[in-house]
Length: 241
Image 1 (cartoon, rainbow, N blue to C red):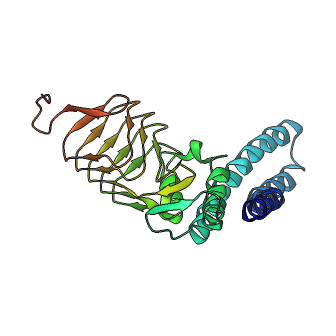
Image 2: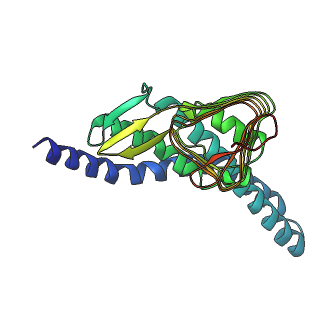
Image 3: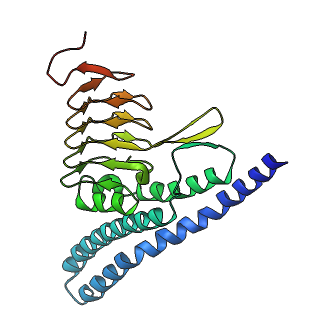
């Protein structure tokens, strides 16, 4: 009976979220639409060629303004509605999971434009608004810092292109939540994957395309690579035995 009720609620929320997303996208478009209409009104009395060029440029700028507004709105809403879950395991068919999935919707909306905005201060602002703890001088070149509220980056951390950082996974019918902590000056290589519960020490390196298993601790200064990732160079520069 409980499972049936859960499926009904899940399907209902899935149906309702579609128009809700349309509203978010529509509201985010307001500044861009206003800018386009103002520019169009100014150019309508100009020469035809100038009107054509100006309309194209203003439309392009309006799209950019829309994208930035959409990303920042998604970050704000994602931060407000993100679940404050303690690390642990939660039944997959539960309202806790629905709450978590709801918060992830805002990240999915942001991804419509976020890949264009990383690395930039706009992308960093988005992640901070969504709940991530980000130190000074970080370079985040990925739109895939999932569960931002459970990710902490130290000073000078570099996240390579399309690296994936997850603070959640699903296994054995449960949603598992565990924070990811990355120390000062660490490097997460492009297209690598960091799973929940990982702690990466200061100055450590996760090589390109490496897959770091859940709850892995990388000591400061070490280099890890491979699938699954293992230590390939110690902090003193020597290879492990």
